[in-house]
Length: 594
Ligand code: FEO
Ligand code: CA
Ligand code: CA
Ligand code: CA
Image (cartoon, rainbow, N blue to C red):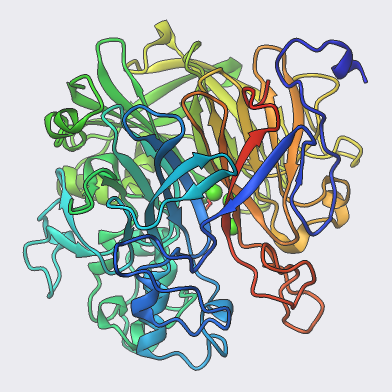
């Protein structure tokens, strides 16, 4: 092909075709090992319960094992090494049919606890051996943070009335994090985990629940939305009894992976949303900028800029020096104007129409109800912003807009310059360049890197940055490695995969793009029913870690049987499918993606 003819030392691998094969299909120049599938011991010394294939592990076991639905992830080197480090990863949600022996029904207190323990974050240690990457067991760093782990609430909203509950009258301590989707990493070596679809764990008896407020409706914290009946067994999840508990979720959570005794901290200065990604970069004058998506249809892209400069280093001393850096700063929402310009509008009480008259008592309420403040400020309603990545050399910022079938429908927002397709089923990738390349600024240029989808589908309106790009749909995970290669991961919904307009796109997959040339090549395709999400590259760029989330999720043959048994079985029904991490290397040990 033409792509092979213009080999330039980047994307030098053999692209894999789109496929519906129930297996990981990887570029042939690469090899992989499966690490840390759901239920694996995390590695806390003396407390390493083995995975029970019949799902009979207890809730207490689950609190010491890999959670379900691996998502955002980062590799933190130990002592600067590329062959030994900490893998920190999110566990987004649970498939309760698979999690419990005998399935989800009937729910009970033990199942609620096990489900809470199967979400959150894992810290595991991994090392490269002659046989490839393996988990280090036990490890003094090993830790499970889950839906009942005590954590601190910090920043301007901490302790304010909307965050106070009966169990925590001070409004500064909360149990747990869950719905952890995408992530970020700070320059000082902490991990940022993002609480996305937290609302679905709250519920209550409809007849005793007060009519929801505008904010509760907007955040989805209303009875009848819940995926699970947690509220019947743990009263903090009952919206009718504890209406503020749900305000304590939807935040960015900062975790020090190097100190297993540290208390995770929810950073309210960054605003509350269905948080997806918290991508950090430095401003010209050395402060921190954090780019964030809010993954719901017609929600916004945000930026936080710290008040103080980052103290350099990423060791223990730097983590102490920057301990409170994320608690003071300014929050902005993005407005994408026509003609490729855009600006950041500050969400500050007393500015841009945000005040008592428009429904905000103070800045704490602006942060807790950031979506409502962003409406007033005039942000642009996007087609579901997910991951954000910053190019290390150019400073360009890339965001996935995964899809939004409601765009342009009657009663819904119309198309606009940044979200140009009605019934946007395929999604795309948008990018911007801050003026003066300063992430601390308030204006930028933007364009579309890709309007995804199958160009052969009539009216698909696709646009790719090169004629020979491999095509994809519903981009979600996004990572730019130290060499400037853009890794794209997809999340087409299970029932849509392989059918109708998605027929030619295969299973969910990962592609590698070279922003300098616009070339895009398909690097791997996942097993049936999975999403590919979470991507981190070791500092020497010779190892790549990727998460396979919910293999076998689709159950459409009427039997209720998962569509995959990956990674333990090759025939659906032969084993419980398990989310897991892939450790990928080039067979010749070379730099990944080149
Ligand atoms: Fe959990 Fe928006 O992906
Ligand atoms: Ca996602
Ligand atoms: Ca998604
Ligand atoms: Ca998913």
